[in-house]
Image: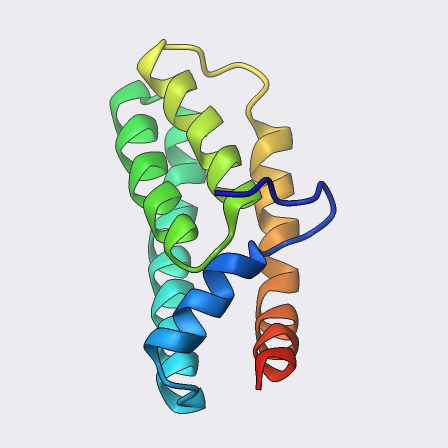
Length: 123
């Protein structure tokens, strides 16, 4: 897989693959995005709480789940951030994770707008 540029939110190859799988069906692609956002909204607050509580096992588990979901919608950099959290949980290292959480939140603020824009480009 090609490297996603530093400032790019999405892996364009993955978006093109999703577009092809959906045969350009925008409703289906919107459902993919909605499913991702719902999963993020359900699990990310819990992950933040586990970071505050320094619950290593739950940090590792939740970060792993959200990493996979992020890769599935082409959010390679976001997935890499979740991977760093997953490793921190695995290594029982929970200090200074808040900046990573902040970066993930910034990614999610961009998600819907950029998702729609990229899919429009592919049409």
